[in-house]
Image (cartoon, rainbow, N blue to C red; front, top):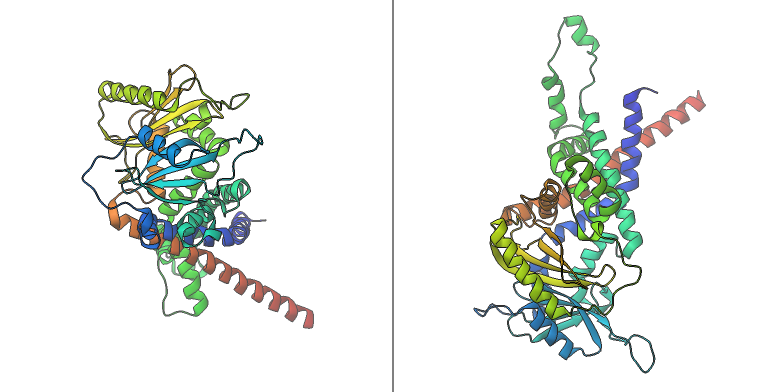
Length: 410
């Protein structure tokens, strides 16, 4: 088989295999570009009014959450500008030895006063509008199928990444000259022969317009499609594919979830309490900011990971690239209080700098509103490319079947 027809088949069937998944992530991604605005519009009760007061610290919010939910265990507090999102897990009922039935996994607090704004079983669409955007997020990240959905979309993302290069190759002009050009002694330049691939012949047949939309659309958006495909691998196959590749290319890349193995047994009752660990981590972050020359702009969150036995303190700093969030992190041991890892989003490790930009670009958290609009439209463009690809396959398949029927009749 000649090389080009082989890659045509690869592109065709890879695209068909990905179609449903890319349509889902494209549509949901368009909505997620405006997650906070849609969340506020749909569930305004979950957002606190603007205030000149300083936000409460994570330990104060954690203590308030435990007062509100004494049967719950608080391991994570995440701060947004208009809400504090608290992850709640059930404690064990000493009378039965079984976890308490809480009926929710997330508690939302006013970040300025600690007042309760709402409770929800995050992502459960059965609870109605209050969980619409979290459900959209779960669809986008894992098809709302938890771990198995994450694997499906991770594999899809990897195939999509590779197929980006196949699709790009197929747009390149065939090297041999046409018979007419040969007779005339003409040799058009590479760029002149490639130019039609970038254009849509709007006055052509419906099939030609569909084909041109697929080819030209993919070319014009190629760089961003590759960014979103590979950043999807980062988010769904971070330890199995993304980390090894990134370390092979950039050498230095660190993530606490990857660098440190799980403990033999989860450390459910760490020697260093949550509030004490926060104080230690905050002091260490202050020292790091002085030593490394960055400015802490806002606290982002504090969480405990029982499986690995460490705390993670996250702030937004002058080294972050995101518009709204931060990923400057410090990890401390829950047993000794020693610093295990400091991760700066840029300027420290090349692999982490690239990853910070990939995450910010994927989540539309950079370059302000114009880029968010672009990401919203890009999601729709991904749907368009998927649909036009299916139409091309259907048309060519129908033509092949008709040709086979004619041969049999003859």
